[in-house]
Amino acid sequence: MRYSEYDSPNSPEGNGIRYLCYLLGYMVVLAVYKFVTKDLPPSILDMTFFFVASIGILYFITSRYNAEEKRYFSSYYEAPFLSHFWVTVGLFFLVTALRISIDYLQALKQMPMFTYQYNYQVNNSQQLFWFLVMSKGIILPLLQLYILVGFFFNYFFRYNDKKTAFIGILVSGLAFCLCNFCPSPIILALEVLIGMIIAWSYLYSQALWMPLIISLLNGILSIILM
Image 1 (cartoon, rainbow, N blue to C red):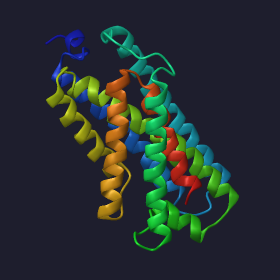
Image 2: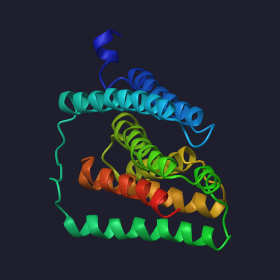
Image 3: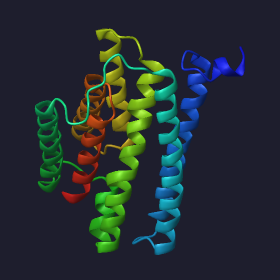
Image 4: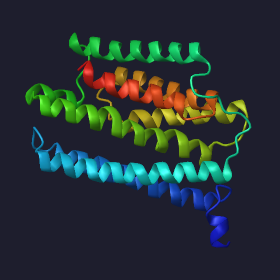
């Protein structure tokens, strides 16, 4: 097979190699985040290191996604920005309710906290709060959006039938849960549901703007409500 054929999304081998590269980029950002939050609150130098590395990788992944969309995926349907307003609003409130439910049960000591929540309680500072907003609330959810939704469906679940869509949504939701290191079965179930909602919104709109809104909402609420 020629290189040009490997470079096409019609090549399962090429898709697997490219996806592993993007997944590796996400793992690098995650590793840098773990390194930076090893000693809290993180220093200005550590935060700068994280933002430079993560924004660079995010720019690369975003550029690749946009280039592949333009070159290979001329979608038969794409919802324009802010179309299906009430669907977006409904998903907005649904994800907000799920996020509040998680934090409410944690406040009642019915479920354990995430690691970043525990770290913030132990090392409460304004600097750490805003770092978490930018990292856990914005940058990591954006990377997850491309890895677990955009490239994921383009490469592995492209067939236009209900069975493929359902399996893709379920697998995407499970992967979303694993990426967020859920500390209990109840949180695991709720996080899987949030991940499935994000995946469904992508298939519904055939565009990234709707899952983008939901991902950022979920990420930012997870920090603001902690």
